[in-house]
Length: 163
Image (cartoon, rainbow, N blue to C red; front, side):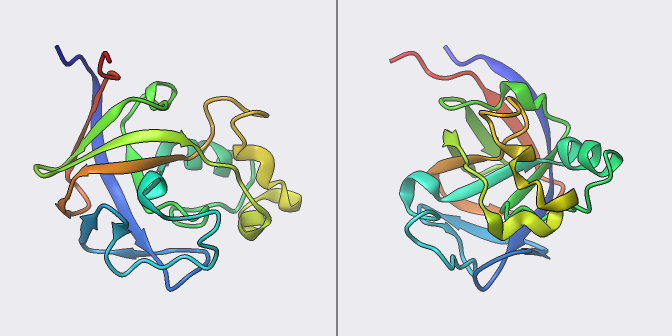
């Protein structure tokens, strides 16, 4: 039995030629290795099947903007900026249905690095560290079903499947 935990939308899809910030695109093809057209400058720490996409919350970005951080969608290197989700529920093991075709599973929290420091006051990129600020981290996902996504597509969050 699958339990739906909530839903939201894809606010923005972000890609880059390697590095940050990532720029917004109108649609993207999702494959088991991530978004077509997105590159990683550091493939030791980013990308691959278990880290195919990086997701983050628009509401977390907006809250940090209220704190004075110059962060904006794509500045923290996330591929998808999602809106309307209870971000506390987006934890390893949950699955997200992105639009009509794409299914992903959260594999882990990301570890922030200095490459995103310009998005934070006094370069305090640890502001989105799961260990220092639980519930404020980006997450990595693996792709279970590929397809095309667009901003505005619905996102449904499902509880981790019983093993």
